[in-house]
Length: 287
Image 1 (cartoon, rainbow, N blue to C red):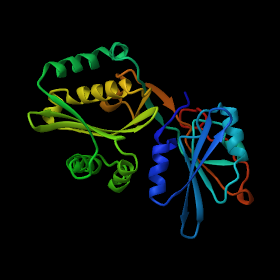
Image 2: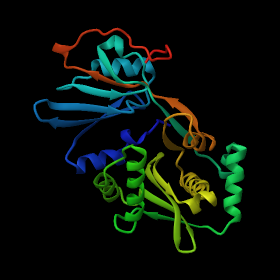
Image 3: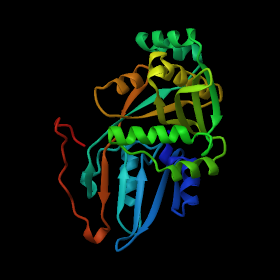
Image 4: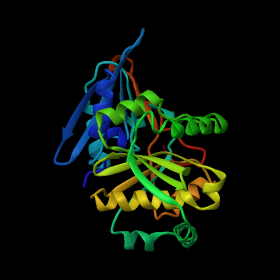
């Protein structure tokens, strides 16, 4: 089945169109697909973006498609392809890595869990936490977004603006899901999953000290994995891996695998384009 990261999905296209962004979806060959978004910026005019795409193509076909792509204005592209420097692209951001979790029958997924992760899950299951799974609601789940915003400030990272999440939920009813663990009536952990069949994406999560003690995050993610698998989703994108920290371990011990992206590249309009030498990462590997 063709890969479907969030930024290449119909659900994301619906969201962008509702924001007034121009969206173009190319179907390439039998299974290839590419979502291109275009924004008009002051002074610059149209600027095109391909994020996590194209999908469903081999590297050589990806390179040919991007080389032949006729667009007005500069193109920014983030793709798994690694041959863009020789086609006049300038690397802006070094390659990054995401964790992808294949979804299958719950018994098999449980077998794939790292022993420590599985033991934490068993501990949570023996407790008294209650799990709910509901469509995201901007008012009912404002506490979750406020808590995650506080995390952003404390840890100095950025996520979607609240307006973008609200529009995703309104344009794709039922596809933004909040899985919550409660001790009695008090939420101690929650996560928000964005569904874009056949994939889904872990968008954000929060937990309290009580939730960490009860291993609530293991229980909420396990519920989300099982819920998605029963409904025919085949992949859960757990997002970027940022380094050797506890969050990366938490993601990879679910049975997720690493997928290396090819960096973010800029292609200028043809009159300004030239060949650029291949850029190497600090490890000596080509971008």
